[in-house]
Image (tube, rainbow, N blue to C red):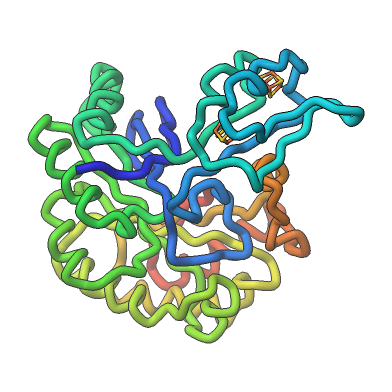
Length: 297
Ligand code: SF4
Ligand code: SF4
């Protein structure tokens, strides 16, 4: 069995407890305006080109079987219409101006990467599956979690919650902690901001909480989208009925703009603004009124 992997992040300290290796799986059903991982949205391979890192060595021109890289009057250009996503050019780009997202890997190959840093995981670190959306590659995700369990590796699953409930029932016994996104409490607003309604997401949260699963809820805070009092109270009241172990409030930021540019994509959230520390603190306090353990990420 193989899956499509966007990337790995080693020594991750914000993707669950302890020190972790985060495995990013490619493909996601949502299209959040504030998405920080545009390289993970679609399943097919993608090539990122960071022009500022290019040293004009020409190695990619020789490596590309499709003639997608060229040098002309304007220097180095990449014709994406010719690219079939083989990744050969990224492999020879020593300047790291080219980055290939979308390697097909087996469970054993992914676990070999995860196990390399086993010595650093301690008692609560381990492997986090993120994306994209790991449940979009359901069988592969389940197989990775089972393999990690057999190897004695702690597991966390970072999910948007938008998947069939039987899948969460199958995954739950193999997940030590869910990192579960709640982006908005109103389904119409959720659809406007992410492209999908939230009914199934909320139902799956209730279901998982009912199984006794360990859950850290993650709320990305975006001014003008989900930071109003009614929305925060709605989320707070919903979670109060089945409190997670922790709520992490995450400030929206524009760090992904460079990734969008490297992929020749327009950032969908270009008009969004960022919360300042005072706005984050206010939102956290509002959620705490509902008896929740809230931290600001
Ligand atoms: S191999 Fe990398 S550094 Fe060299 S020309 Fe191509 S993109 Fe630029
Ligand atoms: S990924 Fe393959 S086809 Fe696409 S530009 Fe690079 S070498 Fe050419």
